[in-house]
Each structure stands twice: as C-alpha cells, then as structure tokens.
View: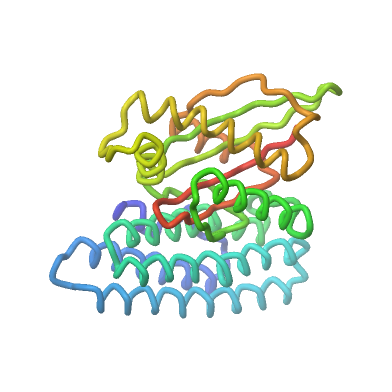
Length: 293
C-alpha cells in the first residue's frame, strides 16, 4: 500500500495549486499508513492524523470547486456531488467506525483503503477531466427519490434477514478496497429483454458473522461452505430488495456466480454503474452496485 501512496506524474492535472494539494494528500495518507504499522504510536497519533487528513481534504475540495467555477467547468455539479458524498457521508462514517472500535486495526484499514482508493481513482479520472486530459466517469447522478428508495430497501432488507443495523458510507462507491471480501454477481433479464446486473460485495468479517449466526457456531476462516451460503444469501437479498422496490415480478434470474476482486475492479474500470452503495453493518463493510443495460 505504501508504494501506491506515492505521488507520480500520472496524477498531474496540469494545475499547480491542485497538483500540490494532491501531493500533500498522498503524503498525509502515507504517514497514516506508517503510523498504523507502528504499535507504539497508539490511538492518539492515528486520531490526530485522521483529523488532519479530514481538514486538509475539505479545504482542498473548496479550493478545487472554486477553480472549477472560475473556468466554468461543465462537470462542476456532478464533481461537487462526489465531493459532498465524501465530505458528508464517507469521512464521517469512517470516523465513527474508528471511534466506536477504539481505532482497531480493521477500522484503520477501512479508513486507509477507502480513502486511498477514492483519492487515487478520483484524481486519475474526475480531476484530470477538469483540464480535459480524460473524460469523466460519472456522467449522471441517480441521487434523489430513486436512490433513497434503494437505500431504504437495502437497509430494511439487511435488518430483516440478518438483524444488522447499517449505515450508508457512500452513495458513489468506486470499488475502493475495504479488505478481503466475497463478491457475487447476479444477472437478471426482463420479459422485454432488458438486463440488470447486481454486484454484492461482502467483507469477509461480515460473511463469517452472518454464516456463523445462521449455523450457531463460530467460524474463523473462509471455506466453500461460507462462500456457497453467501452466494445463496446474495440472491435472497436481491429478491427482497426487489420486493421492497416492487420489481420482483419484472425480472428473472439468469446467473449467479462468484467474482474475483480483480474481475470486480475490471468492471469498475471499464463500465458504468448506475447505483453504487457502500454500507457499514457494524460487523463488516458491504457494497451493493447495480448496472442497468
């Protein structure tokens, strides 16, 4: 991870003030990574580092937004919504995770993995699009009533099936790494021939918790049993969400299979997702993504 947190020329967007801020953000993340690996630094050092990252990130967002407005950047509104999602949902949710777990290694890795992944992909695509070096990925934003309905349906489903109280971490999840996980891909077709693909990504700690609770035994390692149970549960979650959204009679399942992390990342790098949610269940992170075709 430390090598990934190094600034290099490919991240340059060609605006000195913004490039300098990005260098600083990478430097802060790199220091946090080192702090997380040193046992004698303790909670206070990590807490101060996280606080500094948050303050600097929010200041940078404000400066970058001012620059976009100064050049009448056409993608400003969508870009600002991505910033706001990070400002008001992701960072606060990650901070609560850190605080409630007393800065556990797992919560620190959540913070570092998600923030570093977001920073890297956001700069490489969305920020470089500001100066025309690349086309921006987020062409539209499905925030609004549809997103709220999906969030409510998903939260209710996870509570109904697993008795888990969940929190939305991001409405614009971009495939950031939150740890080892099981990823399931479900493909549905309607009578009219339209296709929907669902991607459900369970952090391993969440998968183990769910299956352990179902079987009444404490499971510590991933195995074929856990993977097969999660595969079946993915379909149940999808079906129940469809019921909440009144879509259960419109689509039929074609396929249900496990993906590798590399395959999932490839999907994010080559295709557009219409809905991307990241949730914290209290026992692990969970991503739910929808691709409409």
